[in-house]
Length: 398
Image 1: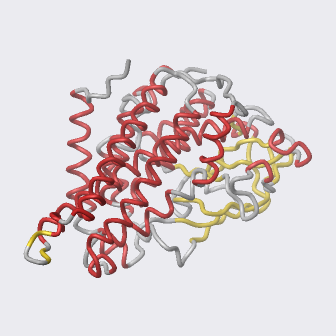
Image 2 (image 1 turned 30 degrees about the vertical axis):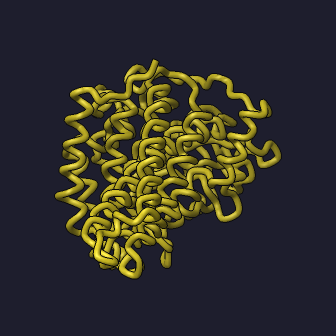
Image 3 (image 1 turned 45 degrees about the vertical axis):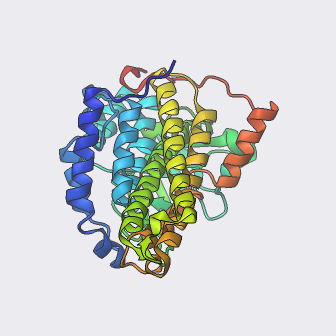
């Protein structure tokens, strides 16, 4: 039923993304990580290669490829560092793909096309200081005012907050309706009242940009409302199906990076007169990494295949995200163990892998949220209905 062998186009894309990571990220990432520096030029170079709009149709400036092509790019970028995969996840998976699914033709021409080309960057603003997993309790308010809305509130843990040109903001038009009052808006950085500030002191993803978005009496035209009033929660959940997919694909890359680093060290380091790779407990950890890598990649490709068919895939994407991110975290921890004391220093990359991997099991739905989701599916407490506009990426229409 499933054939996950790469097409020639996908194989060429994998080679391109792998060469890019090797040339543009790996030689500099330790310096950027230590300096907590996000290198904006990397995004411009990705845009030049068409990798900021991989699965956006060509008519809107994208490469017109499929979801598993997006997964390939995310895996290769995270192999270099989580920060640059995150940029693609947020810009493409959470923002641009959501505009493609739910936007009007005018919105697509005005916002999606320049984003697909990488001329503009998009971000996703759902989480708030008091509303993370419980998205229905968000407090950012949108009040209708003539031909527009006035937005007030703040969003937290927003990736690319200081670099994004456009934010997909979720606000409530009626707090009493909980999630049924949530509405989505396209908010430009240039709108008066929009401010951002970075979060400092993060455990990991030091080379990435994360922060807060503050909205103070921001006037948003009604033409920038995405979907109808009250559709915001449904829009956000469909966006998360794409965002979680890209995070899962990235986690596959981090597991592979941990595996490759561990194999290299296990063949070089000797104890008791033999390579440590000969020791059974080291072999056990490496075998577990290999199992995690292969299993996670298959789950990601299955979810991508379903997306390509236009089939609702919330359950499968959740499983891929849960399994792949847990595998990445465990692989990074085992990689440090294999490296011993050296793994505890930044002389080797595995300590960075460990710090970055912790974020994967938290954002886009915590490990606990996905555990509960999977149990509810198996027990029959949760069932998915087809979402509107669940067509393949290259066949989307209004």
